[in-house]
Image (tube, rainbow, N blue to C red; front, side, top):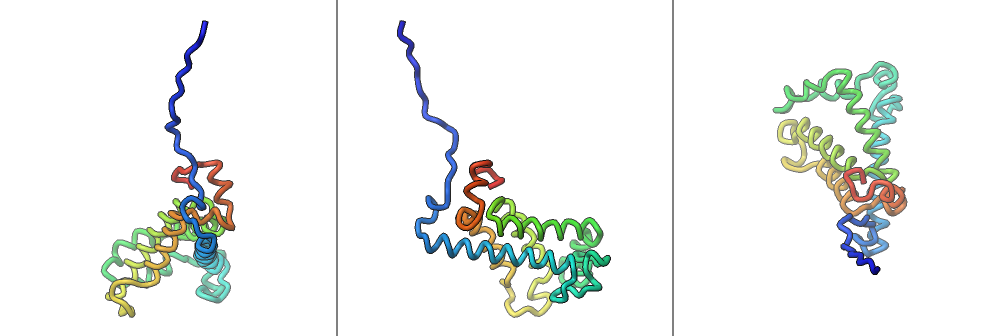
Length: 182
């Protein structure tokens, strides 16, 4: 007796890689450089605040020496959102801030978890922008500043799958597909 087997097209999404999104090899490399540079920016901020290397954070204000990285920043806010940011002026805010810097930095440098890093990093940049609204503190541009640029680099890195070039993005995609973990 013959068996009839019907085959249906798969509805499972296929994993998309950067070469399908960005066809220019030079553009993929440029995007990878941008991703790594922004990642290093976050990692460096974490390391400097942790150890107080004397760049943005003096040794006596290092987190390992009892410094309070988020509380120190929040204490200086004078803009219209100063009261809102006081909810983060505590040890939990310090841990959240430092974990964010580390997580965003590691994700961007390695090229894995770019969607999460772009979302959380953009939220961090929004909060920092609101804390230092240029109009409120006499900035050089009443609308945009470097926080906008950093958020855009994070988002562009994620949507162009820049972790696939000079990162572990392809390997990571094999584990998580196109999910929010990508």
